[in-house]
Image (cartoon, rainbow over all chains, first blue to last red; front, side):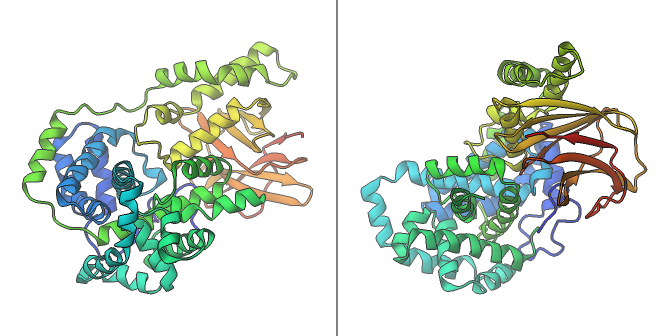
Length: 200
Length: 261
């Protein structure tokens, strides 16, 4: 397990195959953004926007809406950069947390009961699409490799929740398993992913 | 922990992936206040989830970049937190509870109130920030810590204890048995060589449990540190240890506070 207090410095993964977001640089940049540095914000955008748009689009699907939400997320980062505390995790994790939450909030606020049922019916298609399209490029093979290391139920629970934006109750219904089982698989799957990726 | 706590603990994965209802989120975040392991788990799992996002990266249309820059130029940034704001906020909310329940002791009440004020003042920024933050209710680890601090300070049974540190300085503990947690803060501690640091312990008849290294002092103030999982009959001790920390105390405590029951 990681140490409680100081996980900066020694905790950053050494080689980051995705190369999309380099946390060390991002943390320094955010400190500049906090002071209103527009040039630094441009660099934050360049580093973070592709992953932000990527995850938002996985969840929302609609390209136009996804672009809108991506911009909202980046603006949120601009607005609240002074409140980012590096001792609580990496800048990338902070930004992706904001992005995913925004996307899910958007889905939940718009999706009403009847619509959700329809959405549930197409879930298996959504999952196949995710696992094929999202993770085939070379630089993401490590994540893919780690996802492959999960049990089927863990992998499905994690991808439906994170990429699909489904709640654990919905995932349970989609997969036809007990709610408690899904909760456990989400946790265990994510833990296994964390350990496999060597994130701290 | 209790069955309810254990049940909540399994929610950590769903919580990190936003796969929870608002009600689930609220109860899990309450649980986080008293579960340090859960806060550690949340932090690590968020890093893992971020990698899933990065794996899904796609290039935005080029024109979005300038649009976003222009929008930023029109958007006022939230300022960092300022001490006077915190004090104002804290004065209104926590002062009453903490000072009211300060335990009678050798020090005159005025001194105790003053000490409580020092503690409140030192409880950094972030308590105030939590309420200002518009991160849609999501709590960062620092905010969770500060919420934990606010919870202890606001507890009905909050008790303030102070003790002299034998090597110099004073330690102040605000403790709530109801919340099973305490907030530790020290002032004027003797500076240690770089290779050494102060370490806190919970001492019980069965031995010493390490509860963490005290961060280096800022402007003479060390902490605040939140210590969870108090049980009755324990004492809080601080020793001087190698900066990397020790598993068991290797020297005599420089302060020992009986936590009572």
